[in-house]
Image (cartoon, rainbow, N blue to C red; front, side, top):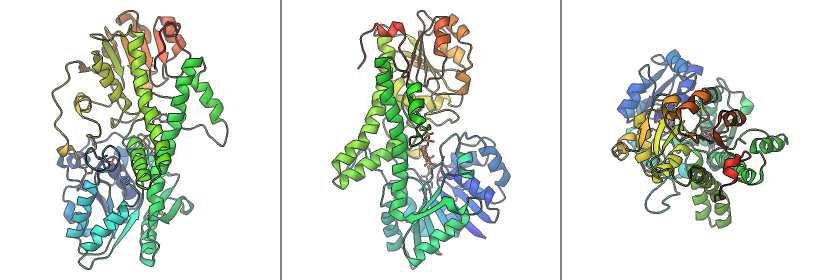
Length: 480
Ligand code: UDX
Ligand code: ADP
């Protein structure tokens, strides 16, 4: 029986390994983590991450050929294939600070693999890492090899949260990069045979190591670039009276462009886009490609601009001050159908409003108070460290309360800001919300989910990203 071990039981490691286990009954899969609480949660009825369909998959094979454990060393020692899916934060200090990936956790995982291994192993990069990480890992492993042979593969994960199980069951492609040597090809074939249990062969792409590593960064950069492109257009639409949804539709019907990933929003979030682009920028700079670096950096600049533009809209619409005013924040996750808040636009918007002394009342169907308070207390990039190494969150911010539903959040508020496109926000009784609010009552829709006309009929002043401006907002001085 082939044994697989995955180091890191996070958003990538957990679902990916669960799907491998359910699709390959002949393979024993162990997912290990240094976090005791995370492993306990994976072994309980309340999984540590919210992902549609994940519960059923885990229930089907947990205890049969899928195991979650903190006994990292034993499972690594026993495995034929070791996936590494640990944190890869952006460095906050030293060389490459603010851009380069901090490979501390990766390196310590690699050293541990070298320490405990007693048989040959295939080591698979699963977490996104900068190009040439495999080479660094290879060096650590071979210099500590005690005669054991290692093959390093890059097998980046393309799943998106919220649709992870669907994406894993039916991937557009699986990418496997390896050394172009006889042993390298054998290792690629071994991993290919795992995916071949359920993925058609023509969707399993095999490349060299660097192409696989770079493809992952490139794919995320291209996706993020589309969002920044449409978000840049949203600012122009507001200035000119065009409707960004109509523009995106017209643009997206060109079959060369395609309709997906063209929804204007308050800004992209998630654990990957910003981090991967920063990595890309750093790699370009290291290779003397300043113009290429500048090109990709702009994708992040537009995303930051979109978030601060939103805060400016809120403040300037409300007579240039939100000091002491209650503002309801609907949604905190970085997108719908996930409880994940990593790099969510809501953090920067909330921090911006708190900076202007607003009182926030936040509701998200999947994110609890502890997470929100922690997110608002952490500094940039601090989230991406194993939980026990994160700085303890400061006391709860006085200006922030986290409530249990949208109506409670909006009660007595001057404004409602929609930060996440949860379906339930579309069907709210906005008449009831309006009744309970201060007047004039504002809605700032960062996700284009509300029915603007209907809300204006009720009496709201409505701002919706990239839509023709409310007459109220038109008369205000332009925001930068
Ligand atoms: C992304 C990639 O899609 C995935 O392939 C990769 O493996 C990890 O990074 P994820 O972060 O889960 O996945 O979310 P994604 O669906 O890509 O959305 C990212 C952000 O962009 C979200 O904040 C989302 O709301 C935003 N977005 C997406 C838009 O603002 N507009 C769009 O049209 C699409
Ligand atoms: P991702 O979204 O890439 O899955 P996460 O942050 O959700 O990232 O998960 C990474 C996991 O890796 C965390 O649960 C962390 O505790 C774990 N981890 C980090 N370093 C190690 C290590 N050396 N050994 C085992 N687990 C580790």
